[in-house]
Image (cartoon, rainbow, N blue to C red):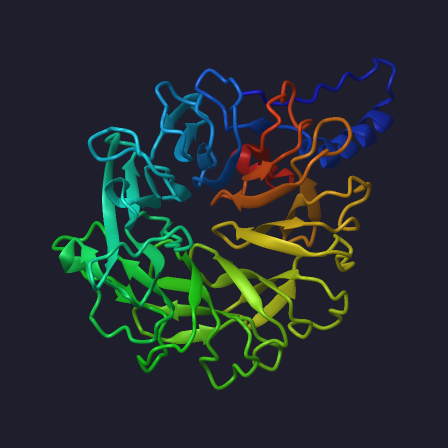
Length: 455
């Protein structure tokens, strides 16, 4: 697994008081470098021969799905396309998830994996039966089986999936609900009973949810609507689901509420039971911010929503002119900025790509800032974690000695908050990284040691 462990040898002559002080210092600092491993590897641990991207992680951090262009992670991978792989860190195995239902290789690329909380189900974008029709593939790790959940085709029966199309499939934590986005011209759906009502006339990307495991089959439901049921007049994207799938956060370019007057993308949450739509990227006065907001991530109950924003009026004192990461507590109706140093100093560069733990306490994000933690001098994008309870911000995914020599991106935090996976083109995070490729790594959250230790 190429895990990095930190060994500390204490001289026998250290006085108890000094030993205690040193121990406390190490307790605060050493976990940042401990338990960092590369996961985009073959079953026996050999490194990938091409780039890996787009990691997703199970609730306990033991199962990671990712996209890779590598051909040597499993035997018999000869399709020369990017595939979806699953690494089980407990078992030390790597398997390919993006096969066809008959077990044969896909002859087109697969991307954007999403995992259920228990790590059993993996969904991803993949062409239907190797054609240009976009579908959602499903891999069941327990049954070791593949299937197509949906494929989408336009009303004329012609392929509606050029490469620029995206479904952005996301599974709820319980694995029962699938969220995705699609354009209005997608009218033919398989299975036919899953087709939504034929009332999509806005010619925009919309967000849908689908109870894929329901019996009998239920139709997809469009959730990017006003509370009144009216269509939105612009694109909606990047869905994020609560654990049970009853709440969906997404970003939309539509000015959809009376309080939304900024003509910029905003982040909203839709209650799929009541139909209520709530704007969450708001100022203290409850109005949409003065800049765009993007790419939400939600806690298990979707009460806590993290997102990136260009706005400068969501919190007081935001004058750094940078993208920041904000967290909205929908129950308390409060917003805080979390892309800050532990003392509250605002970032001196852009932050993006928020991911949040199930309880909403820990927020992982990517930042180019050099002032969020002491000693950040590598001039690279790094991965950080902020603790909303203590206000502490730390950098993760660094080598035991020195700093990362490459950029890191796309963090995903486990549901329990104990682990973060991310992609990086650095070559010095673990020993033996000589493949000159972007890899997937898992790092321990140093602020969540008690969770990993069961206390």
